[in-house]
Image 1 (spheres, one colour):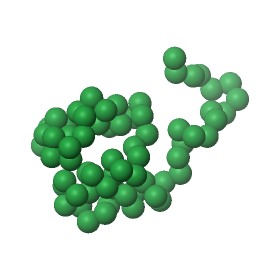
Image 2 (cartoon, rainbow, N blue to C red; image 1 turned 90 degrees about the vertical axis):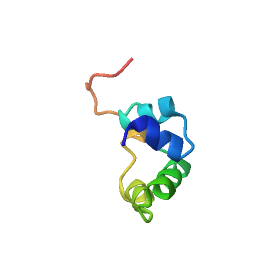
Image 3 (cartoon, rainbow, N blue to C red; image 1 turned 180 degrees about the vertical axis):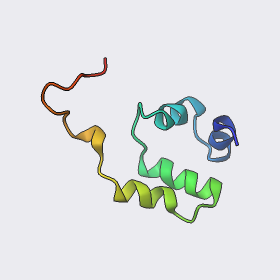
Length: 68
């Protein structure tokens, strides 16, 4: 299924979902819930989101390259 079709089914903006899929934006709990419902995953997206640390909220190690 294409990203556009997934976004449509989950009632999400396809560009926003694309940024999440590419790692440019973090997913929210609302997005995880919408994907779980649209794809009938039984809460797996939300469980993954809750189980993983949020690396986008932690500072990079000293000397690490930064994205601009």
